[in-house]
Image (tube, rainbow, N blue to C red; front, side, top):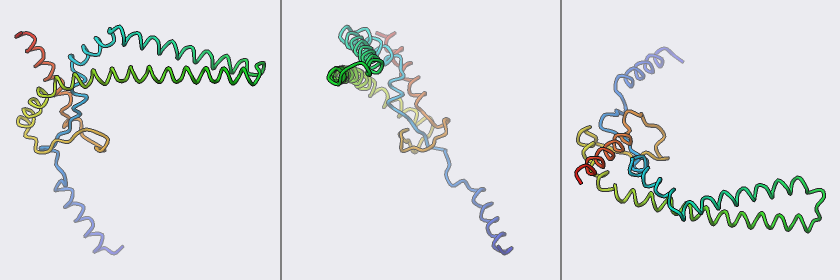
Length: 179
């Protein structure tokens, strides 16, 4: 590499370093789902869900079925040499049936959790939008990005998620004390 090219590369590098290509001023990220689901109201809603009789029964039944399935699989593995092919096939069918039952219960449990999350999100949506608007104005944000898998890196200093969660909790507390 000749000296003139080296000097040009060094000058270009110095020039690029003196002017930031991208400045974080006015840019912020937020995970709105985490902000809402981290609030005290969300934690209370999920605690109430865990105390719901149907949900608790489904959870307990799922744990019981999983334990039965595990026990059946362990017994099959332990006794496989002494069992006939028909007995092995029957036990495998029973394990598969338990698996289907478990999947059904897991679906019900997940649906109840998602329904609770959606309800909490719907209840806090307007307040969250107001708070985000206030933060945009206060922090002079010109670009707000959703913190998701499309975002490869973000400086935690520009993440508004915790700010929104805290402000939602404060607003909920203030609303509760005025009622």
